[in-house]
Length: 122
Image 1 (tube, helix red, strand yellow):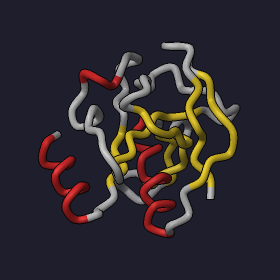
Image 2: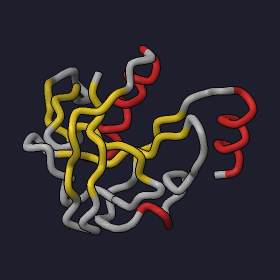
Image 3: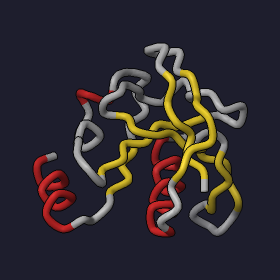
Image 4: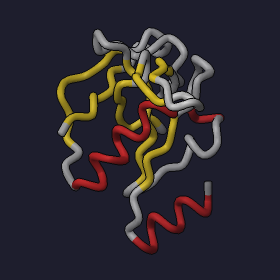
């Protein structure tokens, strides 16, 4: 965590980090527990804008959420497959950060901690 926090602080590099898929607080998962300017820990949402049941949660360290359940991806043979996980959500936020257009479009509610998290949007 210290390395990510130092790089973000000293260079301005932006990080989009998957919160984890343990259905519990991210504050005990590395590197998801990293904090600081330019570090975005991302939980996963479902199509109906709720926090996915598998997604870790907790603010801090979770900063934002993005689609992460039933995401269309490419399989090992180039076929289309459906994948789920915070590792599917974090790239959405990384792309928005790269475009310099990270905003939010409402909030998703977590059953895990009852918290509400901003939904990433362009």
